[in-house]
Length: 231
Ligand SMILES: *[C@@H]1O[C@H](CO)[C@@H](O)[C@H](O)[C@H]1NC(C)=O
Ligand SMILES: *[C@@H]1O[C@H](CO)[C@@H](O)[C@H](O)[C@H]1NC(C)=O
Figure (cartoon, protein in one colour):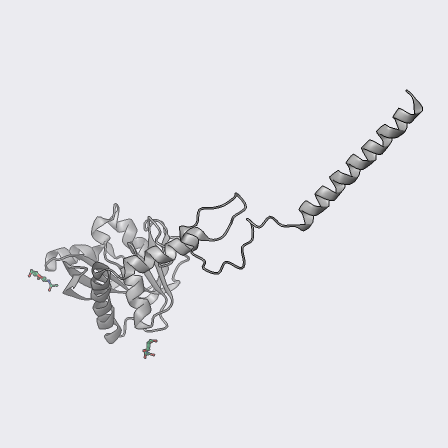
């Protein structure tokens, strides 16, 4: 190869290397603005479509918040929560629940009972259901609760009627509530005979009382049981 062509090619590759290096450096120093948008004057993240794959702002969380606010302000929700509030107020009056009680709500649905207790000042409330409803209710199988024995002071379920295996369901409530604690179940309104059938499902508790109540618009019978001993 002729010498001056060789020199020209060398200069060309040097220039190419320099340009490539500068470009890389520039890309490294300058974060793409689609990733970070700290100075949005009017942020409406829920209306925004992700502008790139690196757009990782918490849209889903904010829309969940918004969805919850909408659900929690409906009349149906407010009425249901207030029926649980009066139920739990009565139980507070009978000293079955205090502000410091650790409470378990089994089959908590969308979380009416959890919210009612929180509003009454009971802060340590765990709601579980087959389908979760954050932030009030977590997902767990009532027949196989993911909690240690005796960690709760008070257990409640308004849906024992719908349980697949009522014995197992009640057994799990009794296992996770401490001895001396209280389990309350609300079942479809019933008389003494049926109440006795429900009471028989409890192997480690003593019957305290039963009363007809209206819960979330339904006529129900509320049965209070007190845990005796943990084997
Ligand atoms: C329980 O908490 C509620 C709300 O914070 C409060 O109004 C109430 O006085 C508390 N009750 C007791 C017995 O401390
Ligand atoms: C609930 O009401 C039904 C129908 O009025 C009645 O038969 C039953 O005895 C009541 N149960 C309790 C626990 O008061």
